[in-house]
Length: 473
Image (cartoon, rainbow, N blue to C red):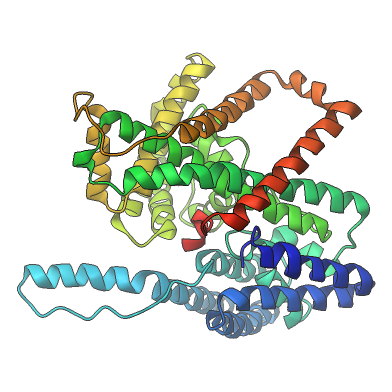
């Protein structure tokens, strides 16, 4: 069930809101309405895996109670290790089993040995996000940042909270535990602010990201031998804008839905394409994942307290892990390692160097580095990525393209690019934002947003199904 599907927009969410506001007068009522609604939401898409999440959540809750109540340091540590291994095991089985067996088969084939049969394992929607959040619960209790959930239903509500369930933001338990303790009431301001945020996200997804996905798919589905250098650059631009507007659009919708229900989720994007270094980019892009990696992997590895060489190694390992988290394929491994290398270069000298060049030049350099990384992210294999990169540099490639980049794709790409450039202008001249605070202008902006929202819904109804990019992670 997707946020922009008619089933969600016209049936599930309106019914949930009506019940939530009419019956949810007490904390207990709001909790149970939200828990049952969230369970139905996930079970609709994952009728089998939902029970595995439920069973593993029961194990989490019991382990959390033991960690929170035990006075023995070693026992608490072993309990935490068991809980983390249990959750990582679920992730590895569903996400990496086929990848590992395929690589073993490649080795067996090279040795002329019988190959293994690939199992049929479907990747559950949102499994990476669910597992990471469940781990934060146990680690937060172990570190003393949070107490165990008041009861099992409260912890289940955190796990199944449907706005963020399928593709984040990744919510660390200590960041939201207080809200799940209180189950705050939603006020009129919450509803209207949340609704506006939801509309903005749907417009980003349906009108910009989905349109550009057609162009990106058109290019990356072709044999690079049949493409021109121009085609490769267009395809990369389409995808670079698609992934931003798609994922930030989902995050906007998730944050908006939560706000309508009275909950406040942390931001997941902060104008990432205005970044002036790769370090700056990762402070702005998928903020919840970056902060998760920092708190639950980088710091336990020693962070920057273990000497310069070890710090650089820790950075690289963290982003290599980020690449593996994104997908079970070698191109994602290369993408993670690639980002890790540039973060190390930032730490060694690049960050200081970019501080001494004009902002626009540092921004342009950073975006080019990011876009090269997106080639590995979008390609179906590492070899295809290398072919695309070679094609981008080969201006003397085939003069005649086998595909047609239509005018509508170029127009939407220009609009998406203009939005990112405007963000840079606003960041450089924040006083300009005051122009939009007037009552009449605000009314005009909201009216335009409402109109685009209606157009976006209409497009989602008549156009072919295009899931969020991060659903497969």
